[in-house]
Image (cartoon, rainbow, N blue to C red; front, side, top):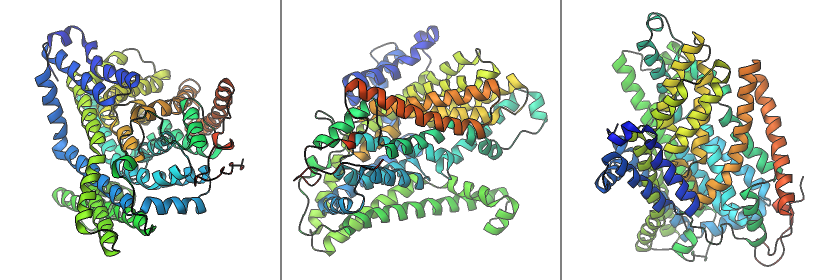
Amino acid sequence: MVESGALSAVPALSLVPPLLAIALAIVTRRPILSLFLGIWSGGVIATESLGLGRTFEWIVAAIIADDGFHVQILLFTLLLGSGVALIWRLGGAMAVRNWAVDHLETQRNAGLATWILGMALFFDDYANTAIVGSTMREISDQLRISREKLSYIVDSTAAPVATIGLSSWVAFQLSMIEDGYGQLAEGNEAVAAGETPGAFETFIGSIPFNAYSLLAILMVGIIVYSRRDYGEMLDAEHRSWQTGKVNRETAQPLQQVEDDLGEPIDDRPMLRTFFAPIVVLIAVTLSGAFWTGYQSWLDAQAEAGEPTALEAAIDADSLVQVLVDVVGAGDFAVALIWGSFAMVATATLIGVGYGLFDLGSAVDTVLDGFGIMLTAVTVLVLAWTISAVAEALGTGEYVAGVAEGVISPAVLPIVVLFVAAFVAFTMGSSWATMGIVTPTAMTVAYELSGSFDLMPVVVGAVFSGAIFGDHTSPISDTSVLSSTFTGADLIDHIRTQFYYAGTVMLVVVLCYALYGFLGVPPIVFLPVGAVVLAGLVYGFSELDARRKDIDPKPSSVDAEIDRRGDAEPARENVD
């Protein structure tokens, strides 16, 4: 942590860089400038001088952080941009548009397909946003779904699914729980002398209390199926449906395929030029993740003197535990690089093999693909940097420390929820939030109750708050990537998603209050929360539509031009 006289005297100064960056990004809609100014303010606070040297040190450190993990994500992002560019140039987008009109037909069908695909790709949030966003963007454009709506569906499915599925997140979450028990044992002799619950047992118990993730996934389904919108999303959907403008007139999408790549080759638009590279991306990424995980698991088992044969390991532990260990040990960053490279190679082979372009044109398109990702890569690097600045200045520790002394058992889940949400909002990283808040929350829970009964509750509350903060922060890496792969404006995505994330958060607070004050268990408060959530969507959409004098179901309104561009499209008459 940075040692600074001003910071020591006024610890609240650690909040300035992230809050300044977030406020400027929302007000000015210029995320790159806003993030840089936030980082620079951190340099000023840390050095008590101009701070430019420290600013650029942090930026460089953010790029090479985590043993090159960030570099791997940047490489994957650039390669995926090339894959998208090749698909566009080969006419794959044109082919899938024609297919979408004949098969999906309605916004509801396209939205449900996106939602289901997002839940199916539970193994990694980065891969989820990249694959779902890239796959469904052209289809949703053809059906006049706004980029804001698509970005919301992708973002609000990816991380919530990853927190409760068999994913790269689970291993990290388990390690945070183990750290929490370890720190608790270090500071408490009775705990050290006794036996603590297992990390996996606590994680499984926390899933019903990870209410935000569960209800956020449900919220997407409610919004898509009901076709109701409210807040700024209602305006965006009316604009997109009635005018065909999937982005706001002055929006600054993080990826602009059409503008940057020009007209595609329209001689022979074929579905295989779209789906073959996408299928290869998924297959190679999954295979690579499981392969690297299995190799790491073998090494760990051998080092620990445990059985390396799968059957013996499953008999010793369990199938679920072995799967969690293997998936958790997988190197998803490397697997994503392999998958995106295979995607590029597949698209190139199709283009050359069918005589749609030569190798020289393919290389030019690959480089053009790098170009369409430069804005996204810049925002991603600066988002990582502002998170590192917050960590260096002790923002998370400060917030957790302030809240630590004002907790009672009944309100503990709610307090932990809001602390984790605020830390994630200011740091832009749910993983960093889990690392900071989980051990502290577990320690407080034990001190208040004198037992381990509240551990699954507070762990679930940490995960819930971390994901909510991630969803509402313009400096979140997953928000940046969701906007990138859906071709949305980052700030428009955050502003429209906030209404829906906030609605889910209200219901989560209600659920936790029912548990804390009345002892209502998850098997009761989750269904109650689902019903309340559906009711709020109906109520908010009706109220907002009446206030704006528009229809709460944008796709029920006659549009100006047809999706094909020559006549009025049919309304969605299904209820």
